[in-house]
Length: 101
Image (cartoon, rainbow, N blue to C red; front, side, top):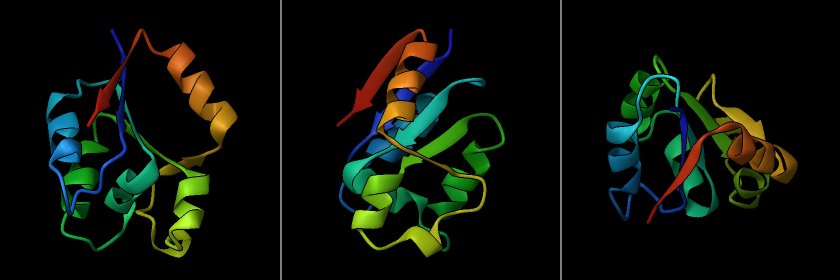
């Protein structure tokens, strides 16, 4: 059962990203959106955790939120930037969506 885990809080303020990654099973996905996209920054304190998770789960970031926060050139290699239509498609492709607040 593949779950889409959505994280909208910054890893610098909350532990939502850490909890989502800790819960995500192989084959599941993590989507970073709103301030959650700060978890996609290469070289940040959370980047090793995200890169390790990418060995078993797919990590996405909402491109509009990455652009809005001016971090497009700093995204971890391998994180796929998606648009809103792809967000909807991801939600439909997974058996469940878990939002981490």
